[in-house]
Length: 298
Image 1 (spheres, one colour):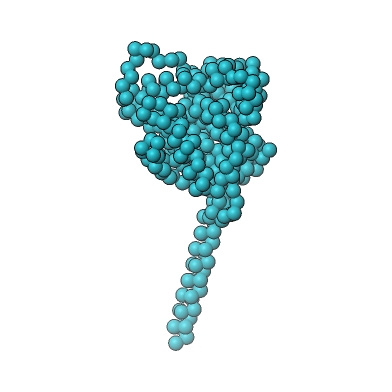
Image 2 (cartoon, rainbow, N blue to C red):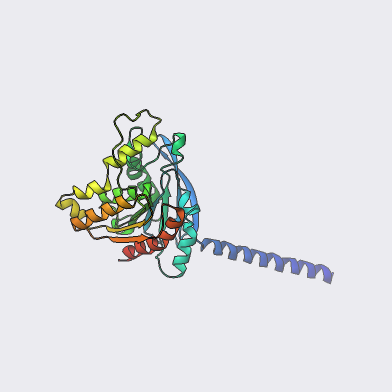
């Protein structure tokens, strides 16, 4: 009989210990950062669009806390999975957070691309058959800032991106300066020559549409043509241009810097050794995230 009672007691102790360990594990998981993949349906695009969300450690447990947000844009042929995957966003954020170099923030990466060679739309601007900018500002941004605990004001909203996304983030911040406090452009597609008139214009030629849109919304031309009111708006955004010295887009990035210099718009510039590669963009995160964090904390 004693052996039976002992067995029951040991079982209860083991069960209690297991339950406590499970509670501790759940609490530990709630205090870790995480990356979520979500989907939103767009009436404007008549399609579902994916996006990735980095949530800081403690987001699940600090249920009353609101956070600043960084919109992080991918490049041509990329998707929302690029920054969490190839850019190792979560690892970099967690390292910088542990070192005290960044504040807690939410990072959202929307999908505006795919394999353009297979006829998939790419681009952050409105084009014939692809009103992505309307989708971003009228549907996507309001929806995600409602779903997540985001502060949702200019002082707490920044944007950044690489290549096509670097140009997209720059153009968004130029033309919506009232919405973003900072912009970090990496190897950015700031300008393209206009597509030739004889170029094909059928719906399947997505590159023609993208080239036309980038040219029409040239970031360099925007600054060169800015009036005093537009220049004053540009000065309310903290600008950072980061481009490798071997990048094929180096010249258009420097043209933007020269235009901003002439217009009296403050900026930061970094030219590092490197080209148009993920090695460069991954390393750029170690500058981009602290830069954005410093602007948030102001």
